[in-house]
Image (cartoon, rainbow, N blue to C red; front, side, top):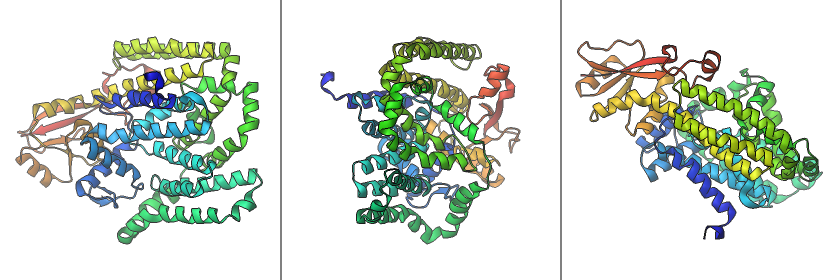
Length: 511
């Protein structure tokens, strides 16, 4: 019965089981900017607003609204909580894997599985981040373009501007122009009426939200979105080209060893001769732009991950040619990973059950290299990155333990932050979704006193003094790091999770 289901559909069910079902019971995943996005989405939900994003009641044009819309739809369908907030990203991951696979034109959904089996895809596909949506729409537009569906490609490109802004649509249009130059068809492209009609339609679609929002909040949009978030980054130095590309290669784990292996094979040279126009058309413009753009973060290069996958499946036989070399390298890396996991166990960061999972999976991953099996590598990589996610969010569970304990003790109370640090305030949406209980933000002592008198609970920042001596307080011990796992301190100093230098202590107080 299962054998009658097409391989691609079986692969997407497998990805859904691995990524979506794993969202249950894992409350705080790797954070990033999603804490702000979830707070904005929560406020839009409560206001019944679809056009103007707000943060703490003020218009906020940090990003366009597609991610917020996805989160709101997830909550509308599945109820308020982290499951509904994150499931749209999982579906976007599966959609991106499907498009990547269709472009590769290989049987067995191999390209899609490889794409999903990277640290970057795990991170962006299981958090309320925008990068997975960018890759989905960017690849989708290319797929439609290569099928000759010009109008549809520009419609998707226009919608892409609702994710992070007009930059990615501009890069895509420049990329199809670069492809025309490589093919020596630039003049013919510019003479096509369908091209100009499609481009005009895409521009209209792309500007739709911006024009609607600008009717009432033109100045706020210009100040935050265009001047600060876009033009402001031109004068901001953040990282180096070497650091940018080094971080990108790191996000390709566990595929990196196999990818480097096939680059030295005759199969890659043959695939390059056949596919170089498509690969260069896709990657050249964004790769050059982000390399020389002053504000460099590895999230930008995630857009290039599909090209890595296409190279691997096109030169699949080359992995068998380099199987022994890549196998021994993978064995060495796997031994280092298992040693790292053992240190995490002894430091109290993860438990022995997770360590046993790594101990069983890493040899299978190394064996896939020895056998030169891309399919085996794809399946073990998907399982491995999901096990890494379980370990990461397990740390997040400990980070929320104090708050959840207070919620159990005072289930009828309303919890509210009283904090001067807005960087902490931003996480109110994420923690509200993770606990399933709406947390509030109080701005002054008068509001705090009123909240206490109505039976509410105050969340006080580290070092803050309770407003009244008669309050009953509990400690909420949290890690200081935003990303929850202080890997540098752990590697250099071997600090256990219980080390006081890693913690900050919030107070939960009520009458």
